[in-house]
Length: 232
Image 1 (cartoon, one colour):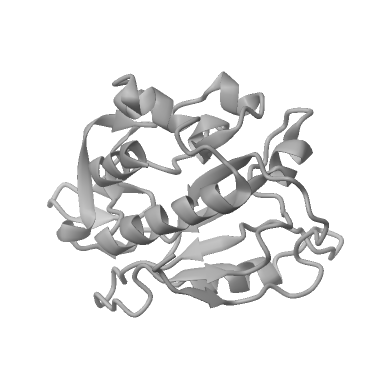
Image 2 (cartoon, rainbow, N blue to C red):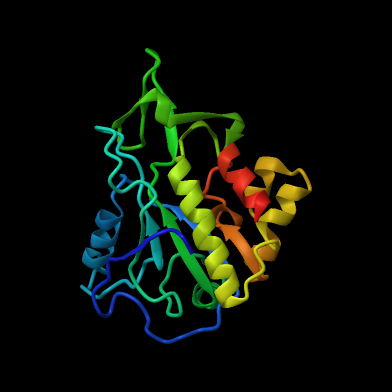
């Protein structure tokens, strides 16, 4: 593996330390800023109403490019916050197999705001109303989950994600050609990112969060991501 992985460990008790055989990999986006350490810090701080640790996290978080000042310090940097042999909740399903699907999967978060709205004066904003430079926004060929504009995945993020996926697939015996790639190679395009019964059933391979959650936006079917997934 050529990409560098930076250790930014979660506090003890923020994930389950039992080792479970991995069958799948899920890619997400954080719906937040370019800083992976901020995402991990948020997981350390979140609590239930009774003050218990939530154990909600993914093993990896990948940094991005700042929408405020174009700072590239974290762009494509992969942070590991717990051993990928272990697990935490990251899918949030209401199905009976939710725990099993979380246990058997490795989660990867990409720092990205997700859906973007365009104002009447042509400017772009995130869901928290923060501005995004036009060059960091992509217009999809057709709306996905109700939005045409999305925060663009950077070239460094895509390259680092491919590197990480190939490494994890090899080490854990996960066939990356199973899952979302099958739909992409059947020319389903953006539809390959929609709810998928095989994903919900726990079929092995590589999936995105939207393959098991119709209310989510991660990941969006951007051309650079699709091209990379098809190349695996």
